[in-house]
Amino acid sequence: MSARARLLTLGLGILLLLSALSACSLFRPSQAPDEGTLQASRIAFDPEDPPVYGYRVVNAYPHDPEAFTQGLVYDPQEGVLYEGTGLWGRSSLRRVELETGEVLQIHELPDRYFGEGIALWDGKIVQLTWQSRTGFVYDQESFALLRQFSYGTEGWGITSDPANGRLIMSDGSAALYFWDPDTLEEIGRVEVRDRGRPVVRLNELELIGGRVWANVWQTDRIAVIDPQTGRVGAWVDLTGLLPPEGRTGQEDVLNGIAYDPENDRLFVTGKRWPKLFEIELVAPD
Ligand SMILES: [Ca+2]
Image (cartoon, rainbow, N blue to C red; front, side, top):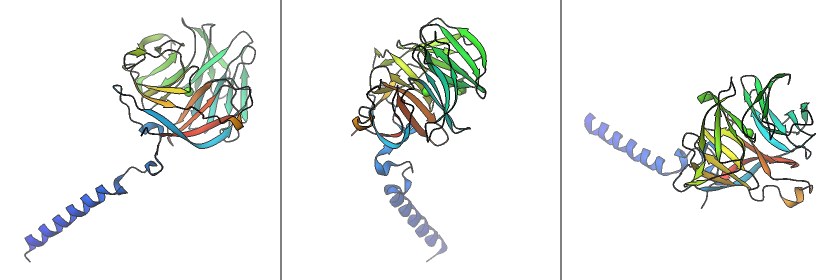
């Protein structure tokens, strides 16, 4: 066999091997498709026909059943959760250990404020209140109050969008508002729609892979939204997440989404839920 024929044979062999490999599982992504689950950053997004994802519980952790969760954030640098809670006279800002649910630090709001969403920004924590049109900025480490500010709507959810230099907040309507993180003034807004229909009662928020995940108040659903267009491109249905045997009888609705971008972990809980869950998503059939 000539050198040229040998080369050709070798090349053909490699081609055949590559096509065989790509047809089998070796080239599939490592993120758990074997179990039929996906991590949050990997779900499909289709505004024309949004897929509805189910879930699988990966871990269940204790959660203070007195915490009326209104804001939830995970800080990958510290490996802890930050939580904002509501109710008159019971509202707070907390640093919480993920694995135990232990409250490591707490700041209680004055009784006249009903605490709402929280967001981390540059070593600070921004906390909204429900109807007082008042927000607070704290030092992330000490919880010292740095600033109090006003805004023109109710306050429901808030999340940070560092890549676009803005905060994104909700007020219970179908709007997402963009805020300058330094002045805390509105710099834009978008209406959220699912195939043309406004999606109202957007509550707690989390930015995951450039998309806004929003709890829809009084439902078990999370809308996944493109903040540039406002279009919903996927839903997550968390019906049945808190099983009957785990209930205390005091629970309110699903609320609270936190994301660990370093390990692609998604955490969800609810108001006065005794558990906080790490979940993965299950694609529709
Ligand atoms: Ca959140």
